[in-house]
Length: 226
Ligand code: HEM
Ligand code: HEM
Image (tube, rainbow, N blue to C red; front, side, top):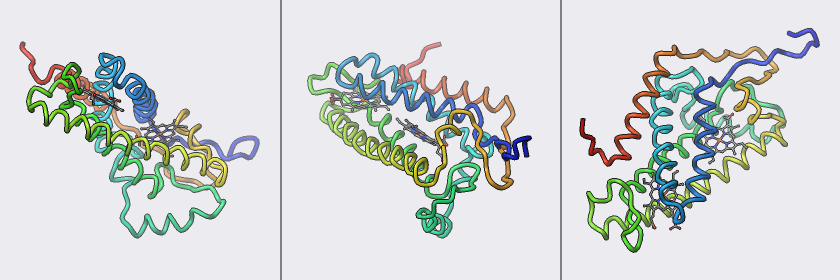
């Protein structure tokens, strides 16, 4: 307890998780705004999203405790039990993603993987703009990838919309400021909760190197000469 008798904030999100989240959110908006217009920027921001996704997957197995998939992905029983508490106005006490939010995180990451993967093979209608792997498929297949790329973006938009509605719901109904926690990495809990266990720096360094190397290789269409 602090001097004012307010419980002290508990650390729950590590720096890399927060940085990846906000960078990804900004870059997705950049990809969206440049789609079909400034395609050089569109591809560049897309490669950066690929790097962030690779890093996030690695961080999901090797990162801080609350970033790990095994720590927040729960079965149907726990998810349903949590869903039943949604109507209550009491703030949740999960130091990390709650079981329901966890599934939206999984859905967003999966759709993003589909989104960028389809973009790599996509070709526009006049064959001028294309992804770096589009030469591996014929024109019609490249067009089908482009259609899929646009369709998955609609799904992604839906999930992002749901994400924002959920965050607003927590803010105004449950009085939980999740956004502040995603910015500062800390949140005040009414009861003692297990705090974040951070990962060693070498795992961060390894993740950054692998993610950057992969994004670079993809951008070059895996045609790298040494
Ligand atoms: C989060 C990442 C991405 C988002 C949100 C996104 C979104 C979009 C959208 C909405 C379009 C349709 C534009 C139109 O109205 O014609 C588009 C087109 C395209 N995107 Fe992406 N994209 C992403 C990543 C990528 C990546 C990584 C690549 C490949 C490097 C890529 C390559 C293309 C290509 C070639 C087109 C043109 C296809 C066409 O004209 O139908 N995109 N993208
Ligand atoms: C393009 C837009 C966005 C995408 C794709 C996105 C995606 C995600 C993902 C994947 C996570 C899980 C974080 C992790 O474990 O690594 C997350 C969490 C979160 N996002 Fe976003 N996000 C977007 C925009 C935003 C915006 C604009 C806000 C703020 C208004 C926001 C607030 C949050 C918060 C507060 C969490 C933590 C939720 C919790 O406490 O469980 N996101 N988001």
